[in-house]
Length: 182
Image (cartoon, rainbow, N blue to C red):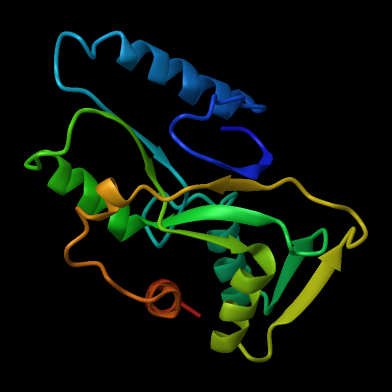
């Protein structure tokens, strides 16, 4: 959608600011052309987090978990009150798996599980790593927000992955430690 402190819905007009966001939006426009010819779904995912072979470390939760696990310190940019929209990798994969067999009407959906301030994410991670240091960078600056309204229709497809946020973080932590030779 692009940065905004207002809650975005599927009715909101996307205004992507990065090349990555622009390319995703252009891809959506191409898919929309097919909607009259075949059942088509567009899932606008929140910031996807979780352990995987090709983890994205530009995603804030993945970055925090990696840094907490291996460096004992995370960097928080701004005051940490900026909010982001998130979804756990296991939930989005289950949504995709269930979508194929569902009666969900074709269309655009927001695949967002939770909206949290960065500071709340950091605090949850600190519960797992009590000795973790939090370093604030440019604490005086107001950072951009991206708040997306979760779409209950698409979230209703999740049948098995009903973990708490802390349990999801514990899974990531375990996978980091199980895969590390240290």
